[in-house]
Length: 217
Image (cartoon, rainbow, N blue to C red):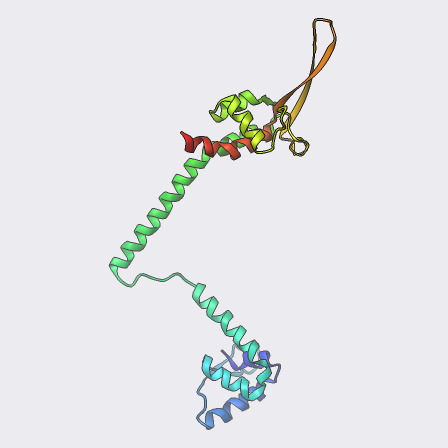
């Protein structure tokens, strides 16, 4: 750390910091090296560069209340140094091990992408579609029986007892209710409702139940 940076941390003049460092060095309490600053057109200045331990001695002499700032700054510098570059293998065996680890990581990532690709393609294909399918058709997409899917949807409180979706799932755009009317023997009309799964709902159910069906298989 330079004397210029210490001066900024303790909010003191640079020449005052350097004078303090000179006195501490004369008392054999610290050591530092002198470096010329980059010139901005005028006479280049001189800064003192000091190590971590000695910087604490300097700040304690100048202004003890700024010690916390110094600790924080050293932590920043050390974090930057730690993340500046990855460790370089020191032996041929270390290099081979690193190459093998990287190759294994790449292969794992490739397999993950291959595994996820069908679901990604499915989502892209149906997310924005205006078509809706029946729950029975959705069951066939998932590779399970229609009755089983109805039971699961009711158990997860997505569908009500009469197999109609709860309002919040309709509001999310996952389901659509279609009303039909049938006539009894006396020609009396009776409304019925059919639950359809929207494109967005198909993506939701595929994500929610698709993995379960894969594991069951």
